[in-house]
Image (cartoon, rainbow, N blue to C red):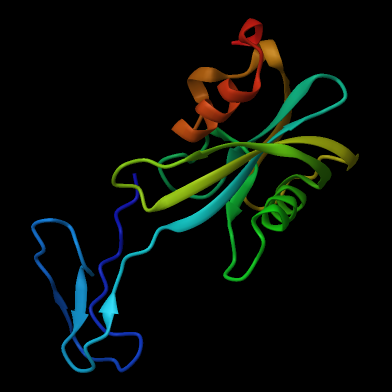
Length: 172
């Protein structure tokens, strides 16, 4: 679970921020002491894709970034850039992390968790072209047959939930 970074200074004028103590949770959590700007801690948006292949498998990569999911299997995905359409971000992330071009078959679900600043939009996707190419973000990349998904080695709760949301009950 990621700990949100607490800001100290205003993005507008550089003034010090003062935390507000709203008991009802209403209003901004911070106010600039110089210009009065309200500062909110907005969530970070990410996308992921459950990519299936012709041979009825799902693409997973073993995470190379050093965090709690390091060395575990995750879905291809990543953060959405400011001003980027979420569907284009999903296509971009899959291509960057796997070498595959995919067709997005539709959204699966939106995943968010208490105390985690990331909101994830997961898509069902089908590989249409390309070959698996490992990116620097992966220690390994593999297509798992549905009945051989390494459930005990998944890196994120959202990976587990997205796989369960897409796969037929007979594969779980």
